[in-house]
Length: 508
Image (cartoon, rainbow, N blue to C red; front, side, top):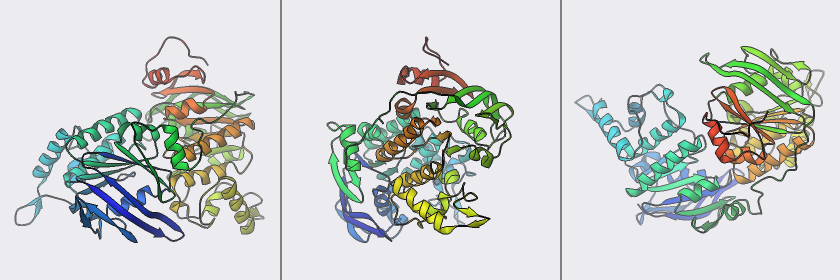
């Protein structure tokens, strides 16, 4: 189907999210919609999918104007959307999850015809090479397969226009390549794809045309065959962007964090961290690389006091922390940037100011003799907003209403608002745009250069190679190799991440 959005405008209190945006997408093509967090991408697509109504503007499909009062109307017109945060019922199986709300019924009582639904799902899965088991429980599926189930949901509803909102945000590089294969299969049969992303490499690989949004407006268009990552990044942000943060050589000092023969179990009581030895020194950045699910999450949770260890020794400076609480670890000068900012980093229904003091509310200047000093809270929160370029109408704005990049800046501003000797940063730039990534990397390097020890966990090889002074690779709960930043390459890191070894180059 041919899609055109013409002069779409949408306002929210204090924010002009979409300002007369006009874009078009051709049948059987991929339109890459690129922009920073908060640029208006998702709002625009929520209008297309019927979740929001535009204040003004028009939607045309095959030349015919459409007015969507709700998502059901958009679905009837052939528009399907796969949201960044999947909307699947965990206890359902694939057939139930896909058919929910569009059930095939039979008989006088309108009974759900599971056999007919299952047959259709199997056909779609085979046609588009989705490779989904129709009888599997959603809660048992890996993230990449859950995304395919979301795509199946849209195809089951006969969507000819498919919107993919940040589809690779939680995927491994291998799963992302599988997704691109699926996208090519869909466009080959005439499906129009709108691919929302902030990842430059991906939009260049998969899109037929690129539209860049900035602060609610169309900043420009680009041909992926002729444009470059640098040109797209500059267009997104509106200035020259450093795609690789500038940093001098590390000057390692004393050991700040020491792990010896650490063993930690996961929630199923399987051994997730199995005998890890690692030192992180003042004035260096150590990055733990690896595919998600190889013990990195449990390792970080153990260090910051959120998970009990089975055995081993953990010290920060001269302090043993094997049995320390999160507050005791924090009081040692440890900053923690969690991998899931929405679940572990912020309380969405609290304000920026309230989130800013979550782990320091009991200390001066915020608390005096057990009484909260709101003036001091507001002053320091306002300073953090200014220093860390947090884009918000007010420090009293709820954290949940901020874009992902600004939410992450709130977390980083809070953690760096007090002197730190150790920074634990898990997936610090997951889901962020190039401008925010540049900013977070620069702040981490500043902490290193100020003498802090930095431990980063990341699945993004670009990030690993950009910031790591030393790189430790985890596979199946173990450190399988440690490389200096200068010796690390995509190839040797990829081999270690997959559990293979290579000739030489591993150094402790």
